[in-house]
Image (cartoon, rainbow, N blue to C red; front, side):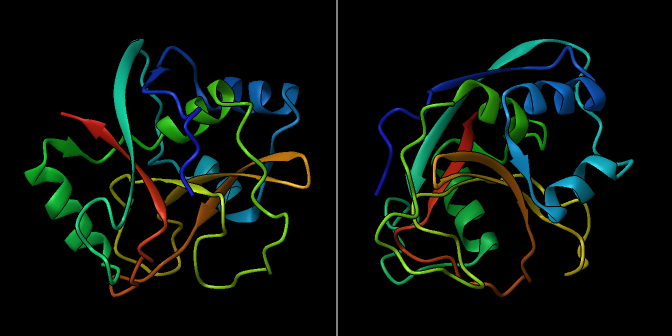
Length: 170
């Protein structure tokens, strides 16, 4: 279920990690342990230059994978369609600019080892190949609370056809 309110462009840059965290706290956005680990990672370095990135929110099925697909399969298809992986910092900036995300938990059972219903995953290049390192961010609204969450996955993880992903337009 795609949320039509997802912005088509995101402003980013011009803030460091500390400022991003302060802005998230001010908006009462919660982070999980994996998101905090991404912020603490020295390889996550927000851009100093401000810019606007055009984005596309697509389901795995929209990318042509009715049975699901891995990150590599999805990214290859996205590249062929003129889309690219997002900078890692797009996740926090999108969360700050997308405060009216639809509720995702009402009527849905809890999920484990898959994207929660109503969540939106920002596809970015992983910091490394370790299964223990969070791969990126996803956005969620659960019980009225906005979240910026990090996620972990292995290379063979198959995304479900209805999972919503954000790519940048090339």
